[in-house]
Image (cartoon, rainbow, N blue to C red):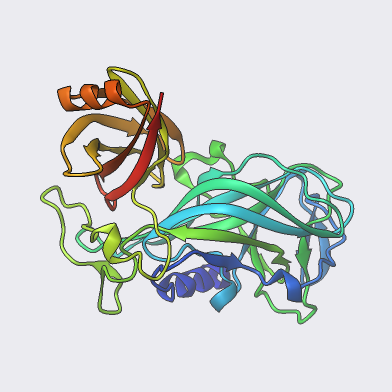
Length: 344
């Protein structure tokens, strides 16, 4: 148990600031799945041993560019890829959370979410669209560091683990859990994982939250400033989006329009609930068209009803299509602003 935790600690310390969309995890082009066992067996230095269960989770502990750790300050996993051998079967990608404090040390791993169930094709790489918010945060006041990792769960017996065993005899591949990490583990987390040399063949596309680059203070990665409520303060999204796309705490999509209301879909991009306020302004002049408070669970999408102002009702009466400015403020996360279209 000690070696894998030290590896995870080192990975957390070396996480780089977020910029444009990036790839996390194993380079699948240079790895070939050669694990012929399923979750009923556990790999060890003396060979395969019975696990006593039929499902399991493998969390990569590989260093450097092939780590599955979320970069600071977090973001959203939008697509995962799994390179599987045969036989194949049902799987999920799970978010495993490492929590460290200055008083109680490092705890790993806590269940923090998972994808839908999918079955990858055998003897090839399968890409799956997902929406998984992940976090990499520092609370210097309370001495808490949170880092999320992606892991791969195999849900049934008789399914070959999508992984490569390098054959070097070192415990440098993954931290394995029997049975799998799941919602049933709750906030208590799991400490029964152990190190082994199998490298899970998993990678993912990651879009960061805004503020990961220009918001960092020195090498510590702590954003400049704090709000009156003690939350970390992020800079305006436009200040950090120059290197590529980034996300606010919640982001807006094109919506619908009636004579009195607008309905705007909002995506929550945080690993916790999004609570804040959506304001609609005219494209020219910035006049108020309406606003609404919202609460959205992590990773979810919700259509927010916005009651139109007098100016908004006049605009909706004149036109069937409106292009408006959407400004979104989210407690504890970066704000967002963009242009969206509303249509009757």
